Image (tube, rainbow, N blue to C red; front, top):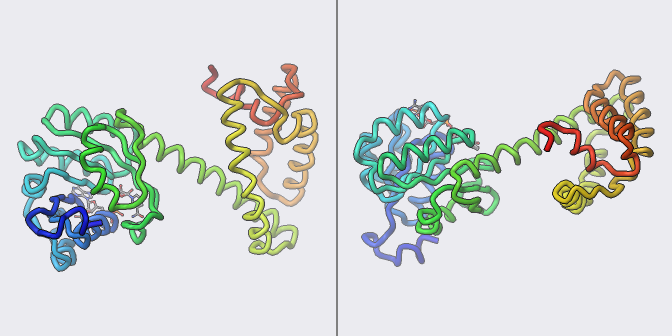
Length: 299
Ligand code: NDP
């Protein structure tokens, strides 16, 4: 917290600059300003800086001026194209700075930014944001980081002000890998959930009551996921969820039930097709995790 970080004297307070004052950048800048950091902000559309100025931040006229103002520079813009434009405008100001880029983007883009920073005498940390602006400054928003370990350790206290943080290693792309994979798990689960709500509604079951029961069942998933990951890692596949021989028979019923109600069964058909192939290969005694062996890329 600011009081311990700053030691109570405004001059001794750590300095941070925030480039980009959209919804997320503003929440980040406000968190730093309210916790006593000497915060400098810049935004392309200058008017968005006014509420931050009221919160005690200094407003820079250019991104280069903001970058010059602090050893730690947090970048939170719309996308990689915006980041590239803003970085290109920084000139010598970036030399000796630690850039923390929280803009969403791919692992390859993060690695590209890290190379750019290295060529311009700056350290680079990539971060991704898992949560919404109102949660910034609370433990209920997650920030995976990766890139320069030394820079991360030097600024860990400041980054912790933003939420729950985790460091994923020196590869600047690692935070984006984590983000993309976490988001993918969510979307894959949630589209399946929506299709299943179609099924539930078609059968006349109350969606909210059903969801309450599903939420209770979800408690069993963390240990299952852990045992699946272990099986995938070791290649030793026990009969998780039962043997494929037994599960495949159930899948036929699930597919025909969905189709009889006009509900999408594309994922169930994918599962059944994989089970049939695995059984045909002589692995019908293994479990669901063993389908991993058939998923691309193989090996
Ligand atoms: P906003 O749309 O609210 O803000 C976008 C920001 O990018 C503005 O400051 C905008 O400036 C700036 N910008 C866009 N293009 C350029 C450009 N070419 N040059 C300079 N500045 C530019 O987005 P958010 O703040 O919500 O999101 C920022 C990042 O955070 C995104 O990468 C997003 O994916 C990520 N994120 C956001 C979440 C959210 O819930 N909001 C959740 C998780 C991640 P201007 O004001 O001048 O238009």
